[in-house]
Length: 171
Image 1 (cartoon, rainbow, N blue to C red):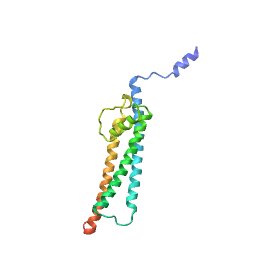
Image 2: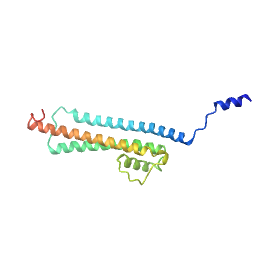
Image 3: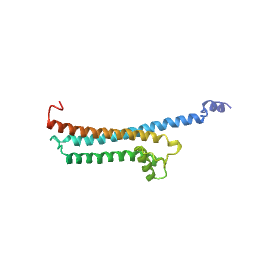
């Protein structure tokens, strides 16, 4: 009959395993890109909050040892909180998709991967393993950004200290 011919025409051709794997990989890369974007946005917001707090004071900051140490300690605590939030985003993603056995394992894996420690005692299933390197690279970048942020704060304080001694040194 005619309807059988028509249905054969519109029937989707079978997709081989190679095409399925490529499509799944592309979807995983897109989702991974979204996770990277969320991580960067969280980091940018956090650094913006810290920077606005540091720059808020119009008075010249104290350049003695203990006030600088206290400022850097507070910044370190805040940066660690930012990194924990970013790790939590990845961990909750892994937990939500049941990539790992439980929430604690998801947080552990995500923390070890984000910090690029890479113990290897807990790994993602094969279909999810592409997310590990993406999270690791993201963690490296975010830790590097935090390190640069620290450098800016310390440099600012050192330059101010030099300016107090001799204003011509920083000119």
